Image 1 (cartoon, rainbow, N blue to C red):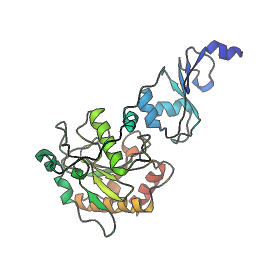
Image 2: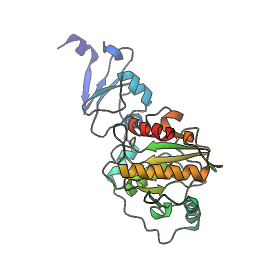
Image 3: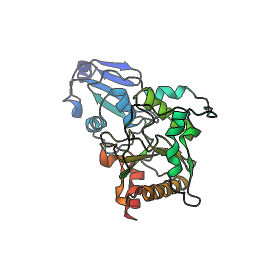
Image 4: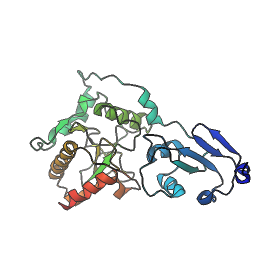
Length: 287
């Protein structure tokens, strides 16, 4: 047996290699221990962040990654990690939720969805606006802050939530809402609006409340997320047209210039909304 390998006492655990002692591991030699993880189809850096507890930047630096896209089969070193935790969001993918009945919406919930009626009329053929009451009857929790007026708009994508690529748009929204409320203990889904692959704009958290989409920068900030992973590809032309029309209408409603529309990565350390969609956003701002 190779002496260098024998000194490490490597244990095989599933698809991960856990290092129980230090040896000469090249770029990882400065770490006192950790584990290797083999990337699976659908894995993202945010998914590994949730399971390992490591910051995305730490994973990138430890593996000298030049791209945020993870290729299946790649072996990543996770410094200081001995085991991965269950991903609360991915665990919910095993449960198929039934469509919710919204015939009788509680008064508090009805009050929460009133803001969508004030959105400017959509451009012809641009998009259809779906109120919050169409996909949930649950009222927004009391642990919220008032928006206080919108001064900027931040664009996101849902690609950092692994394993939801094949789900219908409404199911994606319901599961993100469930994760944000039940695991993060937020008042509601963190985004104010979600752009579906069906070119519909779904109301998430009512815009009269601050969202939970940019850490420490949610005040006066409207959060818009696009369903899909747009690190390497753009949304469909139909989805992009809906996004563009909705951004135009929202900027008109709130008197926000094109320069007031940001990508998540510009306000926090993040790869969101993906390289491809961020490239589109830069073009949108300069138009």
